[in-house]
Image (cartoon, rainbow, N blue to C red; front, side, top):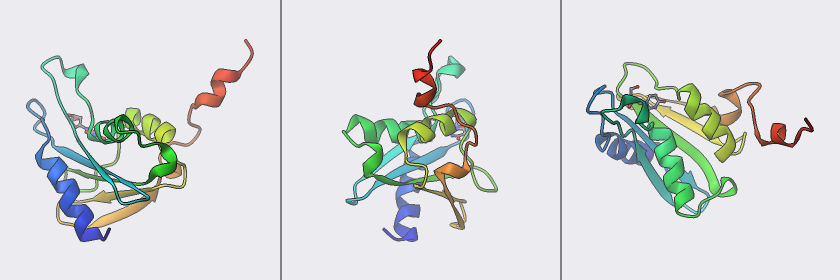
Length: 136
Ligand code: THU
């Protein structure tokens, strides 16, 4: 998929954001090896802490449809900010578990400029499932 197609799709998710309280829309898009696409938007709640970020919405959407980390090649993001929208800390933790370390993260600005990172750039010294195997 080319950058223009990614931009159009992630903007679609962005337009679907339910950002009633912050008015800060975020859109995300998961891309798979075989060309499938899964959108996610932030979905807020009057009980603010229950709001879900776009990144997690998109990844949970993909996983709910049977997609797993081996299938995912890229996560694309866009947010209502002047500059690039970087994933929040909670989403970085989830991204690290649900995507491979060398998978791509593409950040779009609203003007169409973009920047490419990898999952491994997001969260050094991450907690992961290997810690759960330690003997007490
Ligand atoms: N938000 C995201 O969707 N992703 C992020 O990485 C940062 C924050 C959402 C959560 C909330 O709905 C709004 O943006 C303001 O924080």
